[in-house]
Image 1: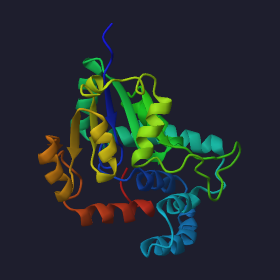
Image 2 (image 1 turned 135 degrees about the horizontal axis):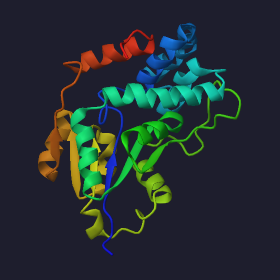
Image 3 (image 1 turned 90 degrees about the vertical axis):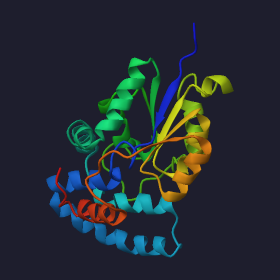
Length: 248
């Protein structure tokens, strides 16, 4: 039997035009607006991150402070509803078509993202993926902690490859020829290891530098329609999402 090929997809700004951490925050704050005040503890961390005194992993943990104390049962319900009703609406139609194309062609679909696993796995299910590789967090059983630990670190850069080799059946056993029949989708230079892992690279709204690299590597570039016109528009969307005033 012929070996199956795979299609690997990043999430933020690849399948969706947004950072899903901010989009999920928007979703939660529309239901529990009082939690916006929890961002006060994140401001100092954000400033320290801006001057290089705090790493990305710590900033990610601190940002989730607005969820502190939320019952885990409620968080799981929000994650399911967010994936089924919000993410599926915002996901690029062009990329959803790519997911369907790969499924019809018999490929195994893998969502590989730095987003937190507690909602990424629901997004993977809602969009029709076979596997989800995401940033793991120690959340406990009852309520969301103030600063959840990341036991395996942030799922970014080469960590995406390591986690995928360990958790997605069949990936570690692929030969170079079999990997040449696989596909990788991303918007970010952080995912160059993921792009180079597969034989077919697809970039979504890449930076100028990454677009130049795409020309050299023979990667395809997609420009699906976005709900904003520039990087500044994207940043303004994030600000509104952080305060729960962005439309769902």
